[in-house]
Length: 221
Ligand SMILES: *Cc1c(COP(=O)(O)O)cnc(C)c1O
Image 1 (cartoon, helix red, strand yellow):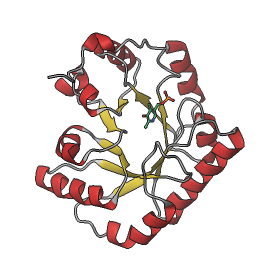
Image 2 (tube, protein in one colour):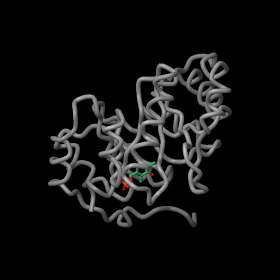
Image 3 (spheres, rainbow, N blue to C red):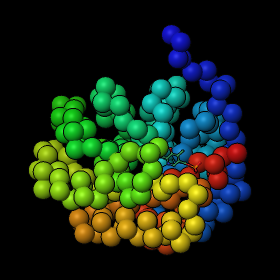
Image 4 (tube, rainbow, N blue to C red):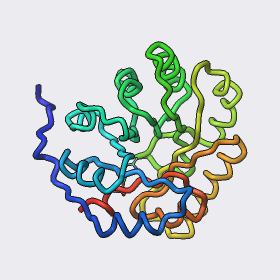
């Protein structure tokens, strides 16, 4: 197996000071997702012992090397935030409680089929692409609006929110404006959640109404 991943590859440490500081600053309706890619199980456990229960992973193979996946702990919620490969959907639905990064109607249909079959009910968010960014996937606003009537008819699942990733290098004002756009689309579709804001732009995301900020580099060093 050429692509197996060694656990000692994950070298990041917890930045406890930043974690506790941000945790204290966040309004109550904003959830903090700890993006634990690059962290090994010890670091995840250390953060869990501080009361952090939501962990996000973006790389499927990496995620499954970790203890939180091997030994299911009831108070830990696992979030998938990476690009979804169609042939991994079954494992994702089986193992994750939240899927933030559903980037097409077709994948949503497949997720629903498998969720029904496995009797799983993941919290689902649709990834939207609100600015041109060749590196990022997601439905455009138009695609989402045009498909919405079909999306709400997919059986056995419920879309709970939207997720977005802003392009790198934007000004604070530009970030804020894209996040407000995401929030307004979510509101227009009566969706509860907006998964938006990362280490560089979480302040703007909170200001715009984020309910899930996804932090990696700010809380792990
Ligand atoms: C890695 C990652 C994050 C965390 O990014 P930081 O800038 O390190 O906070 C958030 N969301 C997604 C989808 C990611 O892949």
